[in-house]
Image 1 (spheres, rainbow, N blue to C red):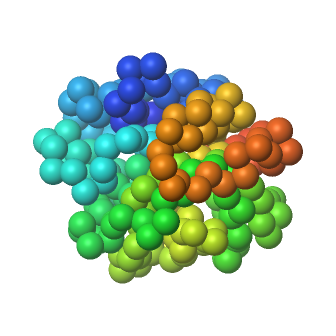
Image 2: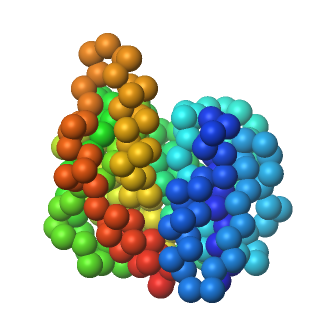
Length: 226
């Protein structure tokens, strides 16, 4: 199985999306290719890849930068070709913008940083085997605020009404939360965000209690089985 990870991280220390690469290794006989969208390093076509995973980013999904426009075009091409697609956080928002334009994404009423309780609203192949609710890490100031035509909502949290979605009848998914993030990554975010006044951090002292590596294992294994 040939897996393409599109890395959108703008912090050099995160380049390569190592956390997503670890999850991709759950796929049997995986060949993992990582390409950097911000450096205009996208493949010319999604052909030749069996799965596509699009990472998070501190970049706004409403940005007009040329590399973001190229990523949208690549996403549209991947969807049209029927490739299984999983967008995480920024990748989830780019999926919505690719299908519904800029009106599909907006600033969150309340930024979500910390361990969010994700509530499953509808069964799906992506989250098969998970409990009706679970905790996962979230880190975003923008979110999908309007589902494009043909997409259905799969999950929500208290602060974010669209935590997961799917393009109906296609193996195309977006998740706002970060199942790939563990305690170490979460603590780095907490340290950084404690500097921001009036920002409420979610369950910032409960990382050891709420982090469950099985969440990522189930979601990504399900994605590779599609």
